[in-house]
Image (cartoon, rainbow, N blue to C red; front, side):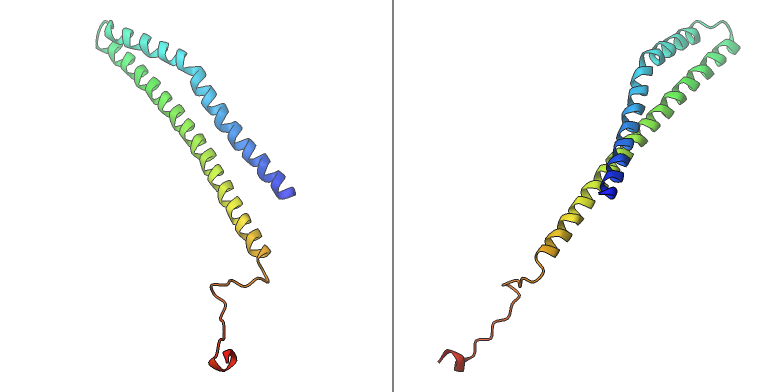
Length: 122
């Protein structure tokens, strides 16, 4: 029972982490979109090469930040999926073990040998 409780708590923590990461990414999308639009406008209307380079660097930084958020979201989602797969595998292994233990003492008719000699039949 303690193992099951620990397992469920770990799963809950992994799923909550994935949900929180996704919520943070989604919550920041409007601000990120506005920021990118502003940077694009600044880059397009910049006066001189230095201003254009600075706006381009800011835009590159914004894109890099969004890519890091996406990587974080994908990593947390993958962790949750792997956790779910591990749970399913553990449950299958437990069911197989329970089935195997429940069947101990029974013989499988397909593997049992039957000794039918001609003398016994007549």
